[in-house]
Image (tube, rainbow, N blue to C red; front, side, top):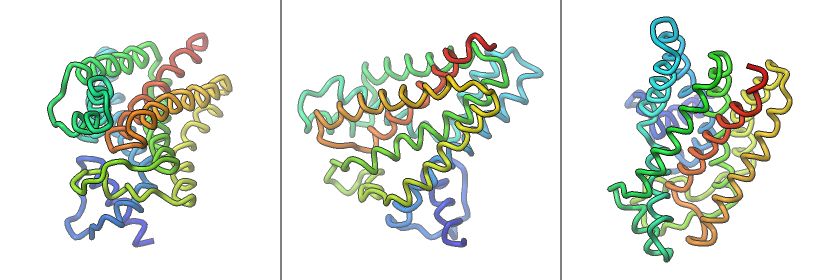
Length: 258
């Protein structure tokens, strides 16, 4: 139990801005094993977002509350996944060879493709949540945050890491994960989604799964074609696109019920 607690704290340390005790041991092996708790980080991020949403819902217009909740999610993670999404947009938008794509994604500066990609995806997140009543916004957030991170983990399980240098922040997870790690991540990632469906009794929300698989298939096909696998930035892109797809599905599939 102590070791699992240390792995969870390692995941919190790596994937968020939340401070953990300095006494927590760290090693690349621990970070690799801590990947199983990435969907649980989605629970934590979602709780922060919902807390802000509820606090502000009584003193600010819904549009403002939702926007500040989204900003809170970005702050909690330090824009970790958004940065990866922007880098992938720049790399795959401006590169025509594997080497050039990887070089562009490694550049800390944001380009036109990254800027437009972030602008569009963040706008779509906001617009989809804005159209939902408060209780559905809560369910959408608590579904999207863990489940989108699980989708990124599935890429780690099925595909290979392509960067050869050791200075990448995602290098520790390049060894992949085991089936048991994947199953644990699936439990944390899928449970809120199933709970939301049962609570709403809206089984059309199950269509979210094929929508996510379609988005994953497209992104993975793009990665495999151009660079032969994934990088940390690609995982961030999978998370961001999956999160947005979930919000979009909630918006469309619950529209007649709101």
